[in-house]
Image 1 (cartoon, rainbow, N blue to C red):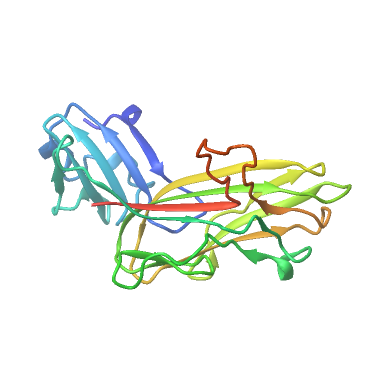
Image 2 (image 1 turned 30 degrees about the vertical axis):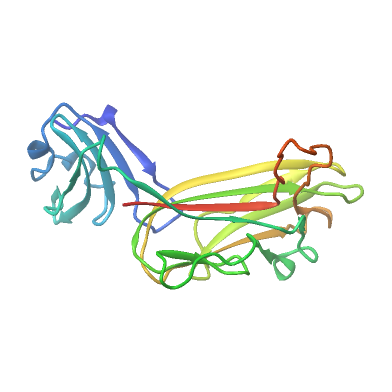
Amino acid sequence: MFNQKNFSPVSANANSDSPKIWAYRTADTTGQVIAENYFIAKINQLKTGEFIIVDSADGNFLASFDKAGSAITLNTDVNTFNPTNNINIERLFDGIATADEQDPTGLGPANAMQVNFGPAVNDVTDPVMLDELGTVTVNESGLYRIKVALQYGRTGASGTSILLFRVRANDVQAGGSISTKLVNSGSTQYFENDTWIFLPAGTTLKYDIMRDSSGSNFGGLIGFNPTDAAGAEWNTAPSAAIRIERWV
């Protein structure tokens, strides 16, 4: 029997049209879970094509929901896996910004800038690639993990800076914007986002920062190179970094 307490979202951004990912643990068998209408209590919340990771009494599997009228089931092409042997998270690339500062040219949308993540990585023969402008292009459909880290900062004078961050999927903003305020010169603030999402081939992702016109005209992304770490192998703290992995 379906147990709501053991059902939760892994990736469920209400502002995005991307497929959601859910997780569920149960003492029921795989056969019971994939039976028609096992998840009927969630029929108004779940959509066809959304994914679910299931930990059942006799195994684990990744499947997708299939809705038809008033019925809901898991697809019959269930990809079962052994949790100790067959789960594989493949790291595809790391992009690390080399610029110590990435600042918009002024206030408002017209002066926003695309975040750069360093040199190009991979090419069209790889599942996903990054170009020198910071654009991510998906070459193979799949379930991807995207981790983005930013270091906000400012060196300007008085007034509070209001910085906005967003992601564009195929040049259309996906989800809400992220905002932060830097109230003093020398202020810094770290931001990190870690998301699992299904992405079809041909998808492009671009990340932007903007100084909102309601704040002062200072700030952006700022990195730091250690000066007192000779022989200690301290790496640079980059202004921006991105890591992409996939579930295979």
